[in-house]
Image (cartoon, rainbow, N blue to C red; front, side, top):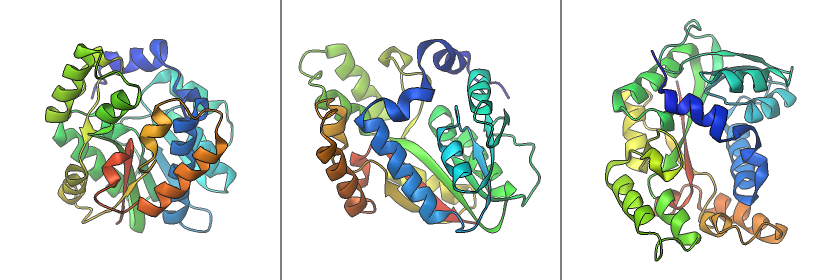
Length: 263
């Protein structure tokens, strides 16, 4: 299976994913909350973890430091190279839709990026099925997606909607279809509703997942870029995220949503 060239070019030439989760307040909150949720669902002892589409290895490095045996796969050559530099986990080329790993060979599979770069529903379900296949009975499949509402919230937080008609049009189109237009500055991507994420888990044979808002209802404040020097507001955002993480009325206010299901 091929990866759209726009995705490879975006992460190779246009955007440094290796810095994203440390660069600003919203990145830091996403990283900390993602790790909180992973810690909650991964086995307490050392686990074999397959980090599918793990990018440059930020989360993989954290999990390896906790004692887990991590293998990272990614389709972007630069990401595999960057991940390999950590030296604390294995990193190789891989495609979420067709894994080389054998059945029942891992305690957990992570899909913290692939589902929002697969615009075709059947390919997203194929990725979830592959993750389910390589996880042993009793293991867990955890996936993250971008919320369908996040572009509108982000543009509103930055004050762009009243002045940027093109941005408003693209946000409206995305809200209707879920498919991102690369003219937004992001690459080929799909943005989920909570209901869609739940339905895709069910279609992949994973049953009804537990669903969490990652950044929480203060994410628009973080996205406004007005709190970079306010550690107290970052702390408040983390607390709010924990308090509202499974409130169905508030989950979509996060930029990212996580689902977890036992195999």
